[in-house]
Image (cartoon, rainbow, N blue to C red; front, side, top):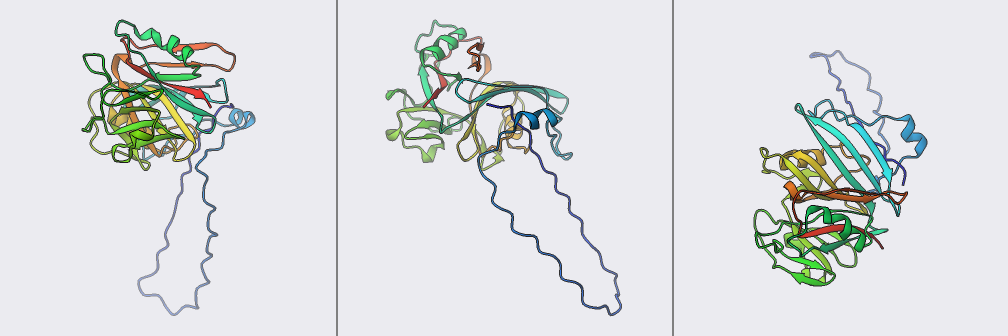
Length: 299
């Protein structure tokens, strides 16, 4: 997979004014009508190596308080996915992100159950190896009794129960295809992999209103562009409101327009793993035990 390009377009428009008491004028020339733009594909085009080398990352709009992306590093993973690591600033604070970009025509998600409450966060590597995953993050919340909070389906086996509330507002489900669903859309009977999570971060390209703007923490999340392109990643030391704004602001996600995004987990259990194209494993485990992981597996 080749490195990705940042794309952001700033459109400026002017307007004309007329005198208050104009003298008689000849008829104005007809205003040219722009040709209808061809609908843009939902699938972002990945840049060539030459384009990536010749361009610098796109900056957000001047109206935005987000600053330019820095420390950008992208590399291909096994199976034609990519991992991107970068830092971005907002109101005198900086956030580190690691995101895996993958195509759902080539990959699926697997809910990897980890029922051993004595296991530490470093178990992510072993879990990903056992599942033959090329990358993954920690999954949903769990209770003090180390049971999944909400419903979890792993390999067709159900654990926990379906819940509704202000926290668990969506689910990642795999039926015949990978889906990111809100609660009223979920048909758990048709899923062989599913994990409830929340809260929702982005809906129809817009940041969800009312998210907590105060508590900063490491957070894992999943996002989709409305088509076949997906993000699975970790953002460090960020509030839910900041993460939603970051994901929904054009130009801040490399070559990717977020249609929907869902928070998965946060805090000391936040972790990410990926296997680069040369076969090397990269693991950034959390500090605490995790009940389940989401792994990206080849179809």
